[in-house]
Length: 64
Image 1 (cartoon, rainbow, N blue to C red):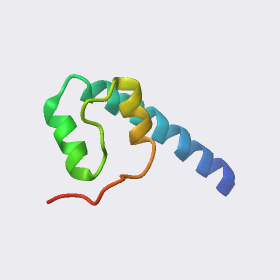
Image 2: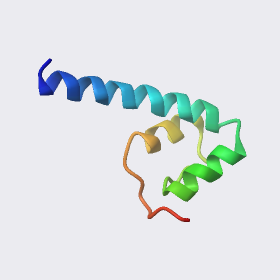
Image 3: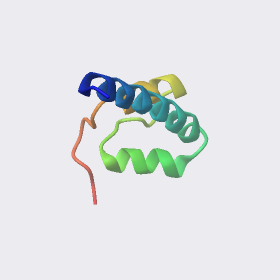
Image 4: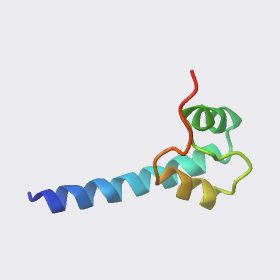
């Protein structure tokens, strides 16, 4: 398997996981809080907006 193929598969997997996590977070204040502590600005966003945020690196430092 080539590096391009592995990279492409990883990218697709990350997108699927971001969308799944966004669906889960839209019903869970605890998950929203966890993503916020990880540095993802997701509070107050729609499911689609959360998915887009999770497809990118965190925008803030993680909080302990």
